[in-house]
Image (tube, one colour):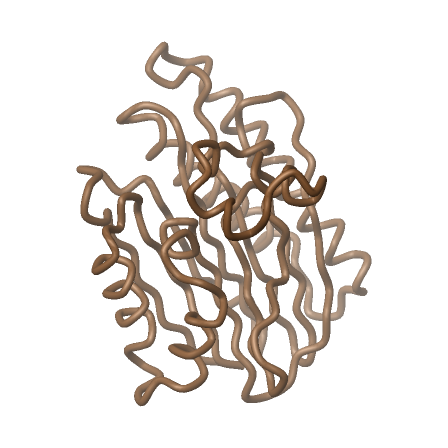
Length: 243
C-alpha cells in the first residue's frame, strides 16, 4: 500500500485544528486516521491531536493480523471510546478546554479488507472500478434534515447549519460510533478527509481528481488547491491510500 497526505489551515483560519496519522501495523496492514478539532483557539488543536494519538496507540497495542472481522470492529469502537474518555477528562483541566471535541474517521486496512469507523462529519470515500463510494454517513444537522426529507443535497450545501455536527469525540462522557467493513481490491483507493475538503468539492469532482488525475502522487495537493481556489474557509486534510 502507498499513502499520500496533506493538511492545511485553509484561506481563513489562522490555526490548523485538523490532525492525522498513518501507521503501518504489520506487513500489509495499515491504520489511517483524520480528526477535525472543534472548540476555542487552543482546545480544537488539543482535542484532535489527543483523540488521534490515543485512538492510534490503542489500535497499535491491541491489533493482530489474524483478528476476525468482529474483533477488529470491536477494537475500533473500543479505541474510539478510549479517545472520547481521554478528551472528555482532559477538558476538565482548564476553562480553555471546556466543551472541546473532535470528529474522527479512521480506516484499518488488511489484505482484501477494510474496516472504517467514524464520528462526526469527516468522511471516508472508496474508489473502485464502479466509481466513488461514500462509506461514512455524516453525523450532522443537515444530514439528519436530508434523511427526513426536509432539505435536498443542493440546499444542504449553503444551509446555515451545515457545520453543526450531532456526534463528536470528547464533549460527552460517552460516544456512539459507526463501523463499516467491506472488501478491497488491489488498485482501488481510499480517501479520508475533513469537511474542509468535502464542503468545497462534490463527490464526482473528487472522483475525477483521484481516478483520472495525471499523477497519483500529487492528488492530495490538487484536491487542496481546488479547495483553496474555492475559498477554503476551513482547515483541509486528506489522507489517500492506494491499495
